[in-house]
Length: 264
Image (cartoon, rainbow, N blue to C red; front, side, top):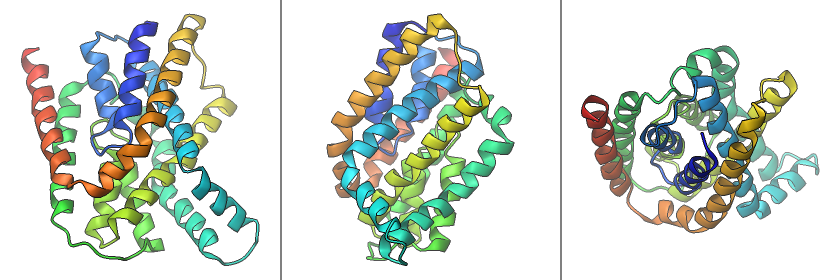
């Protein structure tokens, strides 16, 4: 992967991370269209790096929320911030289990298999469509719903299943307020991505050839800047727009990806 391709893919990641259209799926489609021939491990590594960049941009945009949560934790009281943090931990459990015990199997899906991505985008479209039909409520995220949302997040580790789409849709289908669902969805992924990076650094797995340094760095910076620019207004778009619009988009891209895999 050259530097220009990495920048383009970083921008794709930054722009699609905050919409329910699967950023990892778009990355795999982008890699295929750009002719990227990285082995699955390198492909997944790049995906993790640019996801880390957008996780940092999420921290910047949600800095007030994160600060309130951290401050509430250090008060050592059973307050709303402490409970919210515990719900985040509960939501992380399914993805942590998948990451620890099925990482090798997961890597196999990050080798440019755009037909698989296409079918997963169709599933995302269905999730968004049914979620859009759910009634609006004012319910908060509970510990039980946090775990179920976490299962959706674990499934969304597959390219083509939108993480935000799956988690927000699951939340809404369980009756959680869309605004609260969006906030929880965007914040719950941050410790997971940071934990993944920390694990790979400590285990020595986060390494790449020197010729990849420039490309990885360029992709990281592009994803971070695009994420900062996109996060602020895209979050509002997710809250206010009908999820059906995104369902139609995923449906179209899914069919195009499947068609391209046969005739491209």
